[in-house]
View 1: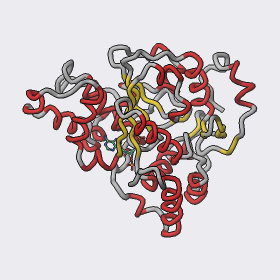
View 2 (view 1 turned 135 degrees about the vertical axis):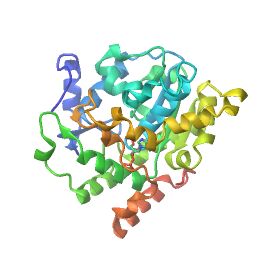
View 3 (view 1 turned 180 degrees about the horizontal axis):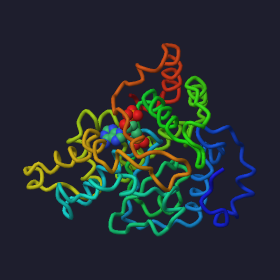
View 4 (view 1 turned 90 degrees about the horizontal axis):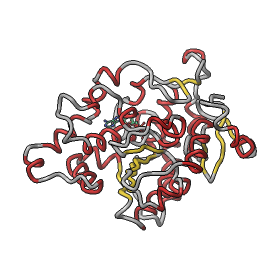
Length: 322
Ligand code: A3P
């Protein structure tokens, strides 16, 4: 199983080997830690972050369960924050993937500390709310969470996992990821950073308790009213748009720059491999269809009923709906 630096994480071995395990979707194993399922690489990163990571008070965390719009959220936040340093032709998003513009806590930063970019205090994470390093909460760092309707999240996750393979294994040589099997596991909560519902609920409840610190977004809303939500995001981040910027169409420019249509056709996002991951995946795997309701093309009626029932049961009395 892939681990970036066996020595650096040696001290976590006894703990990790004591954790419950299940077969993973792409990598060999999922490990159950603090109520959630993790791949080894991200678990080592999380343990290291929990022990060592010190945020700056002005850090803004961009959080999500995988396949909920992380790439989009990173692009939008980065464009909002850097808008006065670049224009439409010089923005780094044109030549660098959103995942390389905004690094991840348990992936990039925990494994390569030199990745920290203090000029742009944005950090991506899939870590569940209750597992975030304590200083992130103690310092009152702001968090933007994005979630996505569970059926679309599952379908997106399955497609992504089919395009990823463990390091050293050709995609064509890896075992196929069976759709029905993946569905069963997802429903049981066994998916990367899952259970999906617990991840969402953790941030949802925290956002109700600390609305000034946690902005809770839904992928579907962002898709329907991007201008409104980008304005909300900028205000929340402490980078509000001035009247002059609004009049000049700055919000629309950011929405267009970060749109699926624009980002997915850029050479930098179209070809090549994304580095720094425990698995091999091409950059274009992060851009598939970006459609609301694509689950209709994949889920059988029985599956729809099952997922809807779990969602209804889990989110009942939380006030969260899709
Ligand atoms: P689909 O598989 O449904 O197309 P994540 O970024 O969390 O990995 O989520 C990936 C999903 O977000 C994919 O969904 C992908 O196509 C979509 N996506 C990526 N970039 C986007 C963008 N700029 N705008 C809207 N959706 C985007």
